[in-house]
Image 1 (cartoon, rainbow, N blue to C red):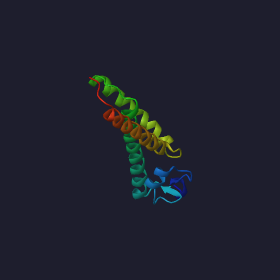
Image 2: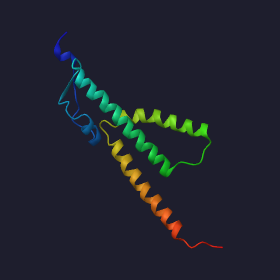
Image 3: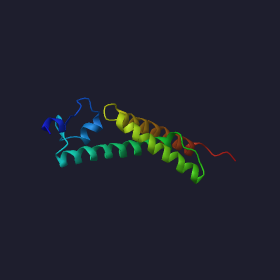
Image 4: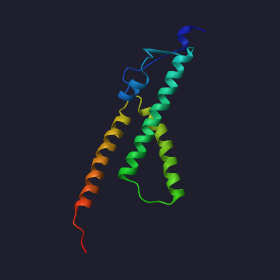
Length: 124
């Protein structure tokens, strides 16, 4: 088996988080080198966890309602499965970056809403 058959080209158009996580791979991934494969697998897992965490935060800040336990579990399982798909898009598209910005915007909105409700005079 030729050495070039076990090489995979690393794309140049990785998103910001993907570039950070796949730092050290170079231009090609050698499938025979266990340390390079471990970096790639670890990078994909960390990217998935980042996207999952930011998706949960965005969901909780912007869209979550009080649900029974089983319905909440179903929502989070479907969210986790959807994040698997988003992880592969997140390699070249700024999925995690967009989720980070939306979480920040929703967090600021919720903070200001909480502060406004606290400062509002109580009617008797």
